[in-house]
Length: 241
Image (cartoon, rainbow, N blue to C red; front, side):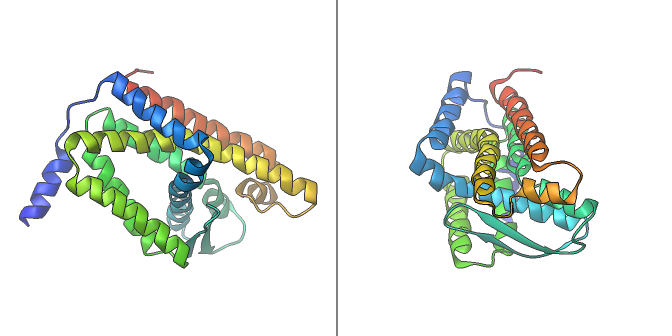
């Protein structure tokens, strides 16, 4: 009980805010992960995990049964849900994936702007734990466990300054990585279109379920992610919109 009390005290105690220069350097570190190919391939698994968590969370909220999550070595993922194959619930479930990292980044940025870096880290631990119980393939299990070990290690044993920097880098990564993932999806759709194969991307499936073409859904998802990057980035650097 003492440990729980101490953990709760850490979560609810605000840390001193880092300087704007430090916040921007954290953003630069996240940007490096996005532009260096091997780093992007490695860290993109974090986006995939959150992406699939978004599908699963909204799926449950609309009454679908989640039967498993898979994360693959090529950084793709799959959330299997059971319910009506059409209708608003299915549309909401499909649409939730790509905005999920952006929305998580916005929430984390709001907490960080108030000094609650430890709260952000514990929120990530809880999210990874919830995803872990839904994982249905070995690579996905490995990816989630490694991610959880890293976040838990920083959360429990790192110094406050390291916790703050880590939380800021991860938040920037979600905010900046979400739009890039949408752009990558569209590139994949373009390649698929040239081969004549069915478009199984989220946007393609949304287009098949609605009266809006897949490209319109790409634009909607990209705008949501860009808006998240602007709002979250502004909160991180202390700008009032």
